[in-house]
Image (cartoon, rainbow, N blue to C red; front, top):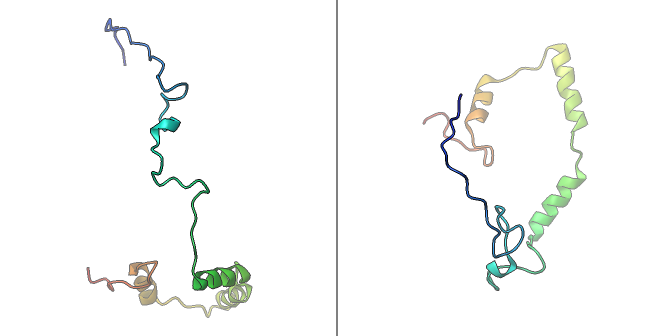
Length: 107
């Protein structure tokens, strides 16, 4: 690809009256954020209900890998008794991952 000289000289970027760094994307000048515009001086906060706290505590106490279940599947695979139900797999693929519900493949 060949680029020909167009004879146009680019205009230099002039400094911003807002100060250094104001020409960068995302840069904000302190005076450009109106006071009281939802800015929380202490940071974002969330309050969780007791059920969320209990669920989190239970999840943190349980092991990440359920060793006994893994051992059970390994034994079944090793002795040839592990069977995959194709319709159950297909149903799981069609369901919503968050709710476990789906349309059953009916469009």
